[in-house]
Image 1 (tube, helix red, strand yellow):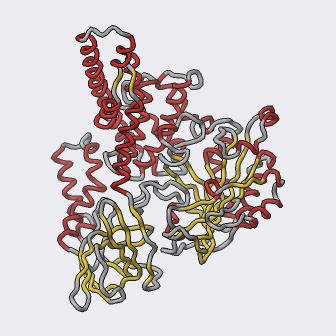
Image 2 (cartoon, rainbow, N blue to C red; image 1 turned 120 degrees about the horizontal axis):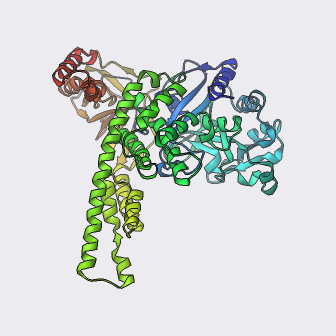
Image 3 (tube, one colour; image 1 turned 30 degrees about the vertical axis):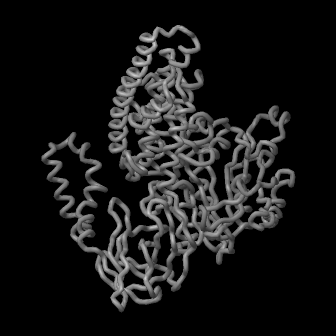
Length: 616
C-alpha cells in the first residue's frame, strides 16, 4: 500500500465517523511562547483543551507535520543512527472535544488497524496506565476492560507514569493513555524472545505506532490534579512507522516516504545505500533533515542565528557536515532534493509546491555559506595542531606518554571551534585523528554543559495558577481600531524568573494591546483606575490564543474598571517595520537575481508603505 493511500484511508475512516477533516497547521508557531514548533499532533488544539476557545467541530481528524529535536528519543545528534526516529514526522490524529471518550477511541483504533489496514492482531500489544501512588491515581481499569473485548489479556501490559500518563507540560490538561505497539520481527526472533519484554525497550522492530490519550485531569501549579469539566480524546499515530508496518519493511527509511529521496542522494553522490555504516547514517540524516528544513521554510521560518531559525540552521548544517565528511560532497547538493520531496508530498502539503523555488534558494545559499565555514574551521584547527606540533618540536619531546598527553586538542579549543565557528565536534575528531591527535571530549562536554546551564538559568520560570476574577469565554482584540478603551481584569497569575524577577500576567475581557508575533514586538502602555493610580504594561504576548499583559505590580483594586492605553509611538514604530521584516526582506537577496538592488529597494519601500498594517 502506497503512503498516499495510507494517509487518505486514515482520513476517510474518521470522516465516516463524523469527524471534520482539517489541514495540517503550520509547523512554525508564532503565538505560543512555550513552543517554537508544533511537536505533537495536539499542539494546534491546545487552546481547546485549555478552554480558551471553542472548536467549530467537536470531532476532528488530521495529519499534522511535527518537528522534534530534543526530549525523550529525539536528540538531534541521534537521528540517523536508528531507523525509526526523525526530526520531522507526520502525526495522524483523531480528536474529541467533550464528545466521545475511551469506548469509541479504543474501538475505532482497533477497527482501523485490524479491519481496514488488515494488521494481524497477533503482532499487536497495548499498554494501560498502571496507576500512580505519587498522584493517588488508580490503575486505568476502564481502559483495561475495554481492551479485553478486542485482544487477549496476555497482550495487555501495564505502563508506568513515564510511559502511560501524558502531560502537556508542568501545568495544564493531562491524563492516562493507552499505547498500541507492533512487533514486526521474524517468526524465528519471536520464538527466541517474547515480544512482551521488548515493548518500550527501544527495539527497532517492536515500536509504538499509536497513542490514545484520555484527557481527564488538569495539573495545577502546586502539582495536584483536578478533574477537567469535560473529558477529551487526543490520539497520535506515527505515519512513517505505520507505513513501515503496512509496506512490510524493517525500517522507516525503506518505505516509499523516504526511498525516492534516498535514490536521488545515491545518484548525485555516487554512494550506494546499504554498503557502509557511516554512509548509510549520512544518507538517513540528509533524507530526514531536508524534509524538516523544507517544511519549515515553506511555513515561513528561514534559517537564522536565533530562536526557531537557529534550530533550522542547526538541522541543515548537520546534514551538510555529514555530506561533507562521509559522502565527500564539497559543493552544494541538498537543495536538489527539494524537487523529489515536492513531487512526493506536494499533493498532501501544497506549500511544498508553491514555495519550492524559495526553499531551493535558501538551502543552496545555506550550503554555500556553511561549506565556507567548514573550510575556515579546518584552517583554525590546522593552526591549533601546528602550534602544538611546534611546542613538541621546540621541547624535543620524545617520551611516548608525554607525547600522547601533548597531542590532544583541548576541550576548550574544540568547543570554541564549535561555538564560534559552528565547526562540529565529530569533524574536529576526524581531522585530529588524521594528524595523530585526539580530542578531549570530556572537556568539550564540560564546556557544553556550562553553556547549557547558563542558558537554562537565564530562562527558568515558575508560574502560579490563574486566579479567576471574572468568567469570560472569549477575549476580544480591538487594537486595530482603538488604542484606548475601558477594560476589566478577568484573571491574573504571578510568574518568577531569574532573568526578569517577579512579574504578573493579566488577562482582560477585551484588549487594545497587540501581542508579540509575526515579527512585531508586543505593545506597551498602562492601566489607570478611577483614582489615577497607574500600572504599566511592559510587554504583551500571546499564549494559547489568549493575550497576556505583563506588569511588575498589581493594581490596588483588581476588580475595578480601568482605562487601558497603548503606547502609540511604539506601536507605530513597530508597525512600519513589520511587513518588511517578516514578509519581504527575507526574500530580498533572491529578488536581486531578477532586478537590480535599486529596483528591489524601491519595491520594498512600496510594499511597506502600502501594507494594510502600515496603513492602519
